Amino acid sequence: MADVHRHHDLAEFWALTRDFYTADPVLHTVPITAAELRLRNPIPDDEPPLLVTVTDGGRVVGAALRTPPFPLEVTGLPVRWAPAVAEALAHEDVELPGVSGRRDSVEAFVLAWTERTRWNAEERQSLRLFRLDELDPPRDVPGSARLATEADLDLLVRWHYAFVDESVPHEPDLDRSRRFVERALAVGTGQVLWVDGDEPVSLAAASTPLSGMSRVAPVYTPPEHRGRGYGSAVTAAVSTWAMEAGAEHVVLFTDLANPVSNSIYQRIGYRPVTDAAEFAFTEPAPGRG
Image 1 (tube, rainbow, N blue to C red):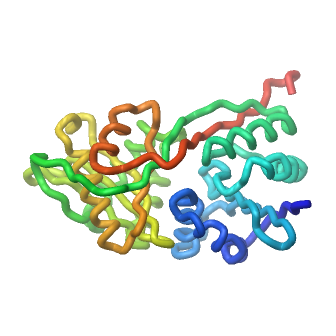
Image 2: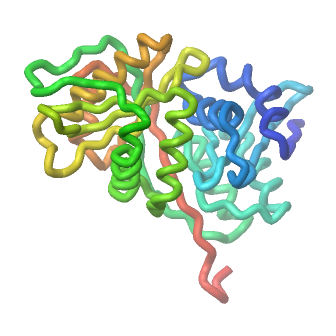
Image 3: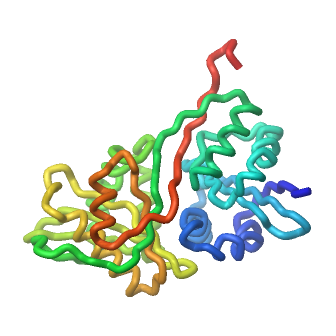
């Protein structure tokens, strides 16, 4: 019988789960990036993470983590272990704003969690994970790419805030966007701007390669600059940066509700890996729990 364990130290958790996660760095892009970036650049006022392992005979067979403000990430939690983890967290009265990850694991956890807590669940995003196969950059897009620097900090913060406001099911927060960008620059994340003339017109970022993997996010083009190929061009440019930085696998997520972005990434060489989802949990109305 498997055992569910809570952990309260990220370094200890990562020592136990690193081999489990890095055995498939494409599938586990989110937990690898979340854990490594926190360990490499800790911020004192970060909320403590939620860390869970499932072991069978002393071997890690499942894992989940949450780094606030993000939901619980359960791609590493096989469907068969979702009820046990939900039971353990519900027993400890853990509050969860939501869950994300590979769709089958997410749906299994949602079912188990709502049965035990009587909370409501609502799908917030339907996603697809892509991996770069052979890069085919777009031609004839005006402008060129350059790596952003500290001098671009205010622009990067504004665009990150706008990206969250428009594309992510979380409330935008300017201070949080600033902390995110500052941390990204501090750990060497590739922040690539597409510049047409003297004007930056699009942004794409890619994480520092970790376990041979780099994830592209965010990709943002202000509304007034869309429809000219800038997003495709800057995504290709940051993908090149990631490969030159040592990434064997370059990945990204798309929102399935946005067919334009899905087609753009496939045209430049990205191929689907698996579907993912994010659900939000809300407390039932009084008298209905």
